[in-house]
Length: 75
Image (cartoon, rainbow, N blue to C red; front, side, top):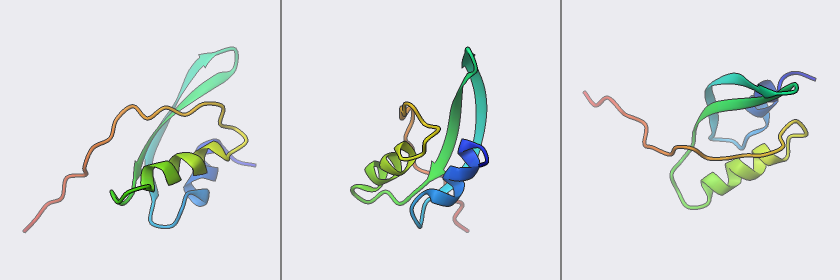
């Protein structure tokens, strides 16, 4: 079945990407997935990503802890 991160990397909406992640143990076999995604900053995209993540059977809760713009190097 694969890990939650592996499933998310292929199931999130087109135009969004899972850049990196770490898994941290919480307690009693529960783990927290700290993930870094990129997505367009147009209206509704964050909601679309959250709903996509919540659909995974391995996800119990979701919390957005940071939102920022990605730095872009301009030549």
